[in-house]
Every structure is written in structure tokens, then in C-alpha cells.
Length: 248
Length: 258
Ligand SMILES: Nc1ncnc2c1ncn2[C@@H]1O[C@H](COP(=O)(O)OP(=O)(O)OP(=O)(O)O)[C@@H](O)[C@H]1O
Ligand SMILES: [Mg+2]
Image (cartoon, rainbow over all chains, first blue to last red; front, side):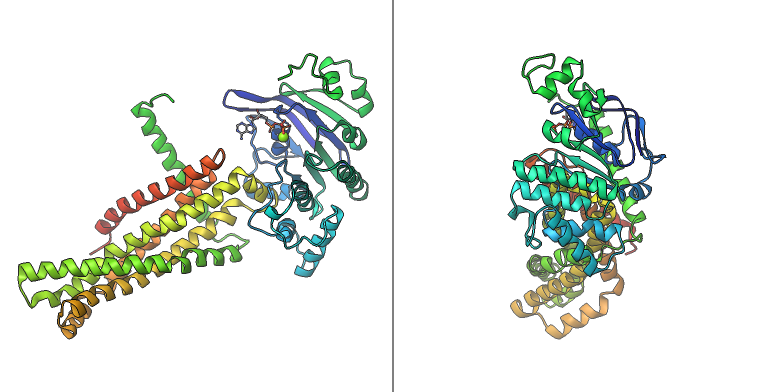
């Protein structure tokens, strides 16, 4: 279970998160929505310890992680898979080396087993026969999917997806939705997804939370979010240029 | 940009020195912790050592030649013809204690220090360092330790190699170009040069290696912004590492027993 309590972070004068409170139960899928620049990526980086907050606590199954040392933190990060918004593939390694990176460090699998896992995970995201290519030889969408394979390869029980479907064609994007749902049912993983795609949000979410002005202004099951009385939420989920949120 | 007050320069100097000191501390703390990144270490050995051979060969050869040239001129002019045979030990001493370690240090900071900063800096701005961390690799252990070890080991090796090439250069100039007596030249060289002269140069080189790797990694890890940030980190590394090498060389020469 993940619990975030009163999380604050500022970059210089820019107060990005101003008191985030969140709870995510085992096996639940939370979709975080919000404007570009509202701090969604910053929020999930906190969950895995990549950023230390100015104030606030984060509990992963009762362990407070914001004050852990790196070596202790790695026992926690073992449980996380993170798909970066910009993929962050290792550009000096092949696709196979990228996908096996976590497997080598987080598991005791043999070389053959790792290779098998790599192929299995690449197949899961619809990529075959590209093991020996370098990241710069891939298209944007292919990179995203390699990043996805790398994040789930060692079977983490909490997966964080930062815009999994951005830059991917609609058919593949829906296949990724199915993959996210399958991971949840088969492996009972807890999931946090950032997305701008409301169709996919409604499809995969148990809960949707909207981040606005540094806080979670609304949280609930998709049906409740759709019916929200908050004009900010309404404007956002309907994608209107007119409304309380300024256009630019 | 506002002009900075001298005080700000001063405090930012101490802040940066603190950052470097902390990185150095963390690196040595992680030196013997598992997992051992053997593959990267071997790669770096090749990168720092083997690939620096051509540039070290050239600089050492010509360093030895000019040093031989001026030593010849000096003896010829002040002590007189025939005394040039005493140039041998002086050349070897100057080369192995000062000139070669410095040349190797400066060349490698240009070749390797800049490459370290550029590579790690690019990884930083494309979130690859964060990705390393999220996949269970400690960036200090994975990136900094192998590079520091490789530089620490390879610089003394390059220096020994440079000593040989440089000494040969000095000998070549004196014996084969100026016609100094070969037997005496070599005999005096072997008679007066001591093991410690060579060794103290190697100790210096190892320290220069640590300086190059740590400054390159430090600049890389704190890279911000895009391509411009990487460019800045690269140049800074070469400038800062070179200056530090020249400064601590003096203090090492003073501190290491003659
Ligand atoms: N390392 C950093 N240093 C300074 N400011 C940062 C840093 N990371 C993020 N920010 C700032 O924090 C704010 C939120 O950034 P974040 O990347 O979380 O946005 P986001 O909600 O993920 O947007 P998008 O949907 O476009 O990805 C932005 O104003 C950004 O400028
Ligand atoms: Mg983002």
C-alpha cells in the first residue's frame, strides 16, 4: 500500500506540489490527470525516491522512504517499475541490455533465463527481433514500448507509468491499456498511471485523481469524476479551451 | 546576469570544493562494495589506457627530445664540452618526476576527463541516471567507481610508458644527433637515477588520475539544461582538472621526499 501525506516540493520560487495526500491500495489502479506542468511527473518521481520532498511523508507498506539512504532505498525500488515519460533508455546499450538491466540487478536468474525473460517481455509489448538494435535505431513509439518492457521485466509489484500511450498509435495504445489491465489481474500489481488520454483513463482506472495548483482537487472512481461538480475538473476532462483554467 | 560580489565567488568556491570532496568520499566508500561492475571497469581501462597510448607516445617523445636538447645546451655552455654525458640522469630525473606525469595528466584530462563529463552529462539530462537508480544500480558505484579506479590504475601505467619513451627521446637527441658518448651517457643515467625518482612520479600520476575522474564525474552528474549544459561540463572539466593537476603537482613535489 502506498500512502502520501502532505507532500510539498518547490524548485526555487516554483511551488510545484503544495500538500499532496494520496492512498493507493494493493492491486489498485490510480490514474493521475492534470495540466502539462502541473507536477504529475514530479509526483511519481517522489514515490520511487528520485526526488526528496521539502516536506511530507511517503509510506510504502508502512516504510517511510523519504529519509532512507540509497542502499536501503534500493530494497524498495526493487518493487517498483517506472516507465519514464522520455523513456530514458540507456543509449549505449542494445535493446536486450536495456531490458535485462533490472533483471541482472534485482534477480538471481541465470543468463539463459534472463534472455528468455527479455524476449518474453519484448513480445508482451509487441516487439520481436529487435534485441540487438540500439535505441537510436528505434522509432519514438518503439522506444516507449522498450521502456515499458524494461520497467516490467523483473515483475515489480508497483508500476508507475508516465504517459504510456503518448506518441503511440491508437491501436497499440489500446493494447497497452490491455497490458496494464492484464498485469493488474494476473500479478495483482498496484499501478499509477499519468495520462492525458481520458478514454484510456476511464478504461483502466479504479480511481482518478486530478492534480491542480499543487493539490489533488478531486479524487474518485471514473463515474464520479465524470459527474464532478468542480468546473476545473469538468473543463479538463472535456478538454475545453474555455473555463476556469486559463488557456495558456 | 548580475555581477557577483567577491563574497559570492568565495562561497561558491567552497560549495564546489565541498561537492567534490563529498563525491570523493562517497566514491571511496563504495570502492569495495558489491556488485563489482567488472565489465564497465574493463571498458574504462581500455578507454583510459590503451586509447591514450598514441597521444602519450607523441607528447612523451617530443618532451624527451626538447628536454634532451636544452640539457645538452646547458652542459655544453656552462660546464663545457665533454660534460654533456652528465645530461642523462638529469633528463631522466626531470622526465620521470615532473614532465611525464604532468604531460600524461594534462593529455588524459583532455581526452578522458572531457569524455567522462560528456557521457555522464548526457545521461543526466536524458534521465538515464534516474533510470539507473530505478533499476537498482547505484550511480556512484556504477559510473564513478569504475572510472576512478581505471584512471587511478592507468595513469601510472601510461607514465611508466611515457618515462621510457621520453628517456629514449633524450638519449636519441644527445647520443645520435649530438654525438655524446653513448656508453658514458647510459652509465651515468643508471648510476644516478634512483627507483624513488620513478616511483614518486607514479604516485603523482595516480593522484592525477583520481582528480581527472572525480572532476569529470562531478561535472557530469551536475549537468543541467540541454546540449549547452553538456558542452559547459566538458570544458569545465578540462579547465578545472588541468589547473588542479598543475597546482597539486607543486605541492606533491614539495611534500614527497626528494
Ligand atoms: N528538476 C527540476 N528543476 C526545476 N524545475 C522542475 C524540475 N522538474 C520539474 N520542474 C518543474 O516542475 C513543474 C512540474 O513538472 P512536471 O514534469 O511534473 O510536469 P507534468 O505534470 O509531468 O507535465 P507534462 O504533462 O507536460 O509531463 C514544471 O513547472 C517544471 O518546470
Ligand atoms: Mg510529465
